[in-house]
Image (tube, rainbow, N blue to C red):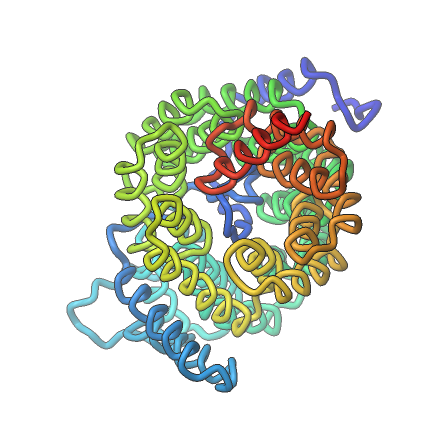
Length: 517
């Protein structure tokens, strides 16, 4: 395929690339998922996204995990001096009670164990029962401990289990499995690509890029490595490099995972029209329920981000028709319901989501819904669970500074929010980290310092109402009334229901500015 002449390819070229490959549906790939404490503002297969197979299951111990988080949060309030690692270890035990440790095998004769041939297939990660697959892999590895491929697959299964069940205590187990695989076969690309995916899941994007590159040296066509490389470059703020990496992935392993990443890179540059058309073309090629749910959810998130709630709800309905338990679609539908005025539907949906998977994003959204209705007690309960989850994530090697900065700036310790935001900006300079640092500086009264970062957050053309709202508030605080009116109005025009609390505050601020003219 002829090389591109520049990073910003014309829309027609983007569509031609997709159309060329529609006759070859891509494999389902579990992309990197960025932990969220705010409603999803964008997606790729990485930021803010989940892939086919993520978020499935009727319950999966969600109630037990919520109860464990509540116990942890209560203990933290009573015993602030208690060492964090000790609390997190106790919480990890609570979260994984009854589950299988690395290398163990279930002795329960009532537990169905799939044949080893099924257990060792990476496809089981997206098409089968994950818990059963893990048990089968462990049983197989007890008999064949030198099977490096199965150790790698077990590591990937643990990464997926951590994501789909909101249980970061699985990450150390995944790391041990990958190390075992690489000790047996130092250059096997599956384990290297798995380490890249694990690093990205822990928000260590420099290592994610390093391991992806190592895997691609061994196998230039490794789909997981190609896709994780795009995700890592996006999360490091290297958007031009990410666009080139998406082109490379498209040339080597075209399919739905690449199309969704390509769409997100275009969206980050403000090219929403191309992003939507690429996603619609990808949806037209989707066949499996997983692909349908995945791509339809991406379209729903894109529509919600532009304030088109009816279209978003239509896409989410299509995703849930394909997979009624697809977590990102359930969460997205609840956000769209809240934005369009269906508070009862949003509350019901979010409560269902957090009962299954108490992750930061839906917890904060649910808390803000309660707070916007005046129920501060229930709201604070959700925010406390976010703090507990963040502590557990950190105890298991996840960099949670971006999550801490976003949640704490609005609902917690402002000083810790600023520390976390500065640390995250030092690691990676993206539109999301720029926005988080700008807002953390603002809530700490440092608006002059905040303004350049707020401008950086909107500099790529990325159409994000929360970013525009933050910039407008900061401009108001620094005496730039005209710019403040412009950006607050733009936020509300783009997505008038972008946040249960933020949208209301944006309207109030804009009204005050208009009255002062």
